[in-house]
Amino acid sequence: KIVGSTLHVHRWREAPYVRKAMSPSSPDARAIIDRLQKGNTRFVEKDEMHGVHENPSIIHDVEPDTILVGSSNLRISYDDVFDSKPGEMLVQRSVGNIAGHAGGAMFASLEFAVARFLPKVLVVVGHTGDEVVNAALQQLSGAKMPSKSMRHVLDQVVPSCMKA
Image (cartoon, helix red, strand yellow):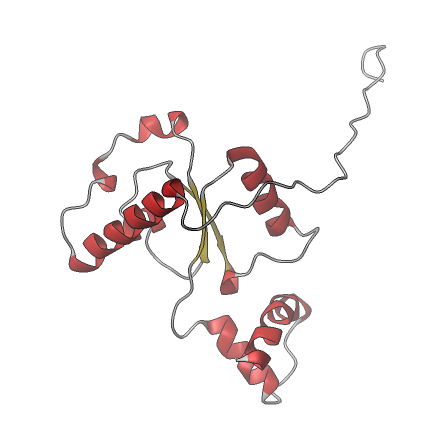
């Protein structure tokens, strides 16, 4: 009780959030993917980029049409990499580009973002020489057992390394 009133008990939704899948060739998704590819080309070619010149105060008025999961090792903004305006992408960074496991914080955060923003595109960005992938490959080669925290991350990556 708070000051004489009983607290309401929140009932969490236990059914999965299900949304009809969009075709990757839908006009909205195709336009977004084209925009991201052109922005990345401008970034690679070091052409004039528009995203970095925008007023950051407009971010709260923009609904992201893209959710991006990318490496936390990248030392620059993904908005710069894709020449996106602030707020166009919701970016979630993680070590090893993993979304975790069902029930985990990152997975739940992504699930919430998808349910809240209904993005048209989900981008998972990888890169060459990823340290987590290298550590997982070393585990497959018999390397010393890492700490419990590192094992939690590697356990998500090792199955893919075994298939590769």
